Image (cartoon, rainbow, N blue to C red; front, side):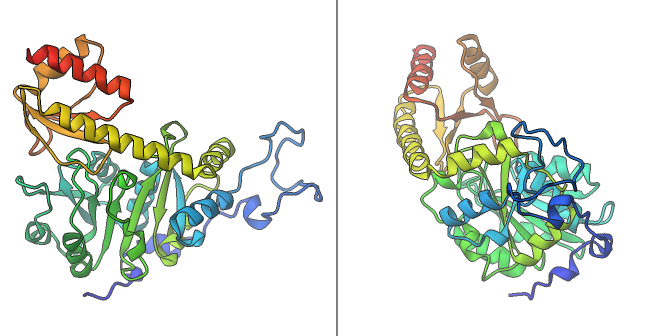
Length: 350
């Protein structure tokens, strides 16, 4: 295994910069015992007239308990997109560095690379099992490769990446390995956050948008070493998570048993949906899924997509993605929603 040193990959200007210090950085405790005249806030109480905790300590503490992971090694962002963008800005030099990502995968990696003027190199998954081609990935690595992106379970394929493949990449690569686990709560496989202590070049991304049912509040989560968290805290906006988002996140996180129950219901509905889809004549293949969606291959994806739209059902047409010609992605819905799409499928296949 190569020795990973974070100092070798931080952008020089980031290393040299001094972070902005907000009023709540300098004094953190907000109680009724103090008069706060430091942050130019409106003094009249509305419930939201004070700036929120810039480091979201209560939310992180709750996540720390749920995930059994240190709170000081967690960064929160305005959606996963913000924490991903912070990684690019902290570690990739514009017009010089490059990153590698498996394909097909989450489209924002490419968008953020282009936004930050970073070369984006794709490595196609193996078509037979949607697992990474390790040698192809490393054939694309050079001295300016700063990060490798692995979405697991992967979107849109649904497949979780086998542990031995991720481990080989982590051990061989002397840069950051970003493991996007947006759908990990639907998988039987453990999260990679347990391995960060052993492999400091791992960054794990999770979200409250999927299993936690909070897509509307836009809260992304990053787990990493203390050294990486310190760099990202240095450049993040001072109050990036608003007070209402923090309050709602805490409310849901404190009822984690309910989240686990809902997640299990979605998994059970997925299994029922997969079984029923086998009876649809125009479906040529149903891909294994560790997520809350199912990728299917049909006779004509665009035609079937349009037929469903006409019946008032919206799914995703992934036919233009690498290795996904004539593929549709179906999110697992409620029992009633799943029954509706199945009834339409049966009607169309009659």
